[in-house]
Image (tube, rainbow, N blue to C red; front, side):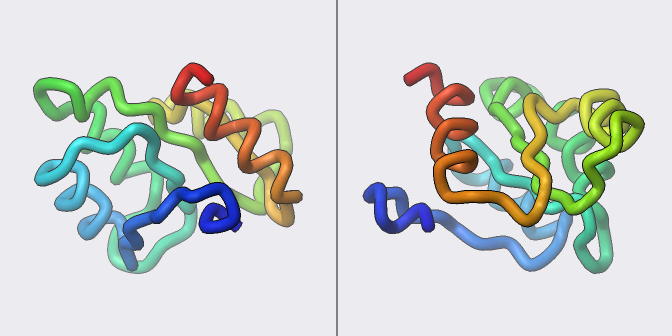
Length: 103
């Protein structure tokens, strides 16, 4: 979906990989799956928020099938900037990314 808009994503297979990616490269936005193997998106987000420098304020958008109010609140409490419920439409994703990066 992102490729249609000229966005080339990096892919992390789990929360540990996501943390390492953010630690070694600046990102405009992170799309964080909540349910990942080894380390979930909540713990990965908290770890990113505890970093020093730009990484700590990188917008993180939760991607999850959990879309109840308490699920969205849990994402916010972990430090995620926004929430997109699965399944989602391409337009929803692009709007969320644009809002996260201020465009």
